[in-house]
Image (cartoon, rainbow over all chains, first blue to last red; front, side, top):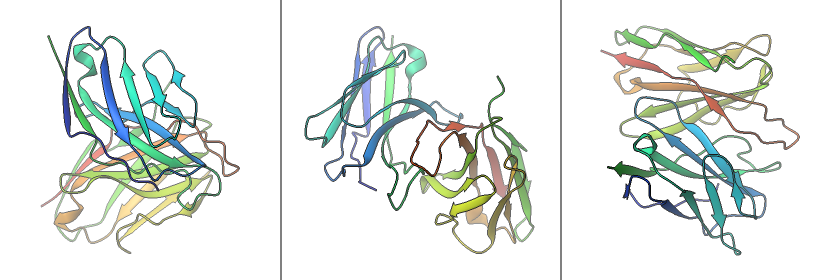
Length: 114
Length: 117
């Protein structure tokens, strides 16, 4: 799987947008970008994923650069409950040698403060 | 609806004993994954089931670790002759992923915290 690089930690004020960057410069054509988060003492929670196009759902938006070498997760109006570790994961599609499984890095600790 | 459940939530065992951890996936999910999370290693993949077979066992750390899935539903992860380095939170996830290339989100259970003394 392609390796991802994320900042170790970030801060965000409540009500503001949180923009979490991720570099995945070795991503290949059939690999997807997935984002999960883990709130303390809970299992990871799916947020969003994409292949080439930008994506939006009720939780967040995902912006993928045209060359696919980096992406940004955007939480439009962060709340205190968004404080968590955010993982950017490159996941192999069909035919990939590590198809299906999620390979977690160290993630970004996002702290939302009042 | 019911999510992924795991039992027990906590397990303390003595070094050298065997333990069994159970995962009940979301009904209808054919794919099931085991991961573990420890302080030193972060979150790491262990094994992937599609139905009752395991096409990817590459993450099992040693032959003391085994897993099975029966009836395409419940899965059990067994650790034999536990060691202190096995102490971790063991997480199970299920999804509608198929081998044909249809990927979906994985839903995680709350985990089993294993402590080996």
